Picture 1 (spheres, helix red, strand yellow):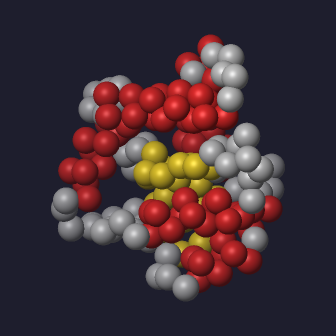
Picture 2 (cartoon, one colour):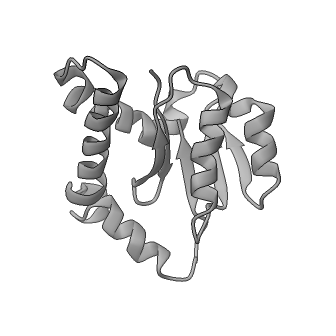
Amino acid sequence: MYLVAIMDWHTRRVISWRMPNPLEADFCVETLNEVLHKPRPPEIVNTDQRSQLTSFAWTDRLRRTVVRISMDGKGRSLDNIIIERLWRTLKYECVYLHTWEAGSEAKAGIRKWMALCNYQRPHSALGGRPPAVVYWLRNDKPQSDQQEQRVA
């Protein structure tokens, strides 16, 4: 199974995620659509160059909006360090600690972990507040700077 997530860079909040098996562009576009239908969609979506995120379905969906497309250089993991940190933390705090029998159990475990990280866990870069609190505070105000989303 694979995991695709869209994260707000400023607040570190995971806005949308899916865990399809196998990973195809359609699942990535579904995740993107969820974010694009929010009251304040991102101005920029930044991704790595995985085939699903360079596919016509993905790029065409973004081109039909006002969202700008940004892609990391090939093999440049430091370009998307914030989401890479999310993957590392998810693996060490959740995935590696469980032996799930079914995909549905894995999804439930990851859903619980994502909720904990978004709504309860204090984040040092956010003054000790959880990402969701800062995300909602920021999105209730007029946009003064570009809101960038990371996808992995």
